[in-house]
Image (cartoon, rainbow, N blue to C red; front, side):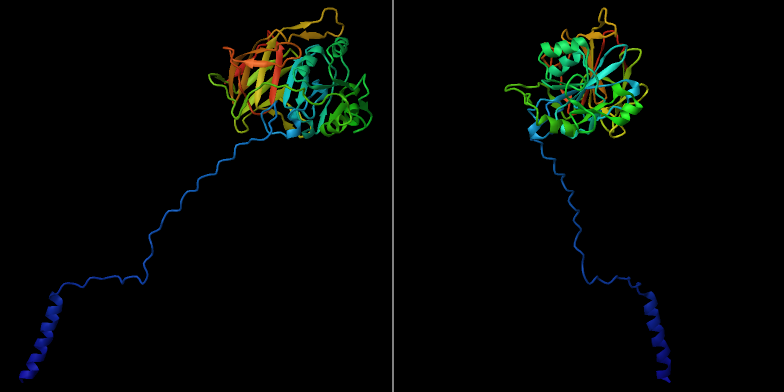
Length: 367
């Protein structure tokens, strides 16, 4: 009897002890393997571009083939009549000079330190004395197609290396037949006088057989300083620059911050290079004011442009513009640009567009 009573009691005691004890904690099993602490990946330091130490184009501050550094540049007269557009090869010019000719129209002088990089160039038109002065300021070989009587007189008197496609032996009838030729499409669609062209390749090939001096003389230096960023300090914002030459021609330069270039317009449309179909853009825009006077008694309305008295102007780069002074010590001297205190300015490395306008040109600057 005793044994039967103890069994339920023991069971009750065991259940009671279990109910009164603390609950057992749930412990996660230790992982079989511990992971090492993660070290952040180091951020790579960008390798700086090595500084360029090779040959530099004296007209742009950009790299150039060494054989062309001391070569005389080529200065080519370019037609700018509306019916003769588009010009070709203008985007390859290191410097474009634009001046009045007659009747309010303008012509351009494209200067090429290394013409081998250009495709077709033209159309090529006739000379005027002040374009000769611009070419002489670069010790350049001058290419033209015809000229005013005064220009021909000055070519002889000033000993200009001038290659003429109208009254000289330098124009052929088909591509590559001579230094220049009359392009059949231009002759048919634009007129005989707007048809003379050449190519950079032809210039290089033909020059190899010519006897005139093709290198600068010892000691020659084109003095111009270039910076990777030529944005002038202390200037005004110049997002759009409007440059009136006459009631016929106005140039417009609009700054494109993405390309860091001034895009050129004329005759109310983009100024396009016919070789590429693209709008011409330049790093530097210079505007030089000077006296432009009609030649008394000239039946063609030709003018003179004073390039030796110097004067005032503007320089724009990087969307900023400053007032400048310009000078040219003589017909064989280069153009020089300074700030208003007489300190030489530095241009941005790249192509330049130089507008030579009358004193009363009402240049408009928009920020």
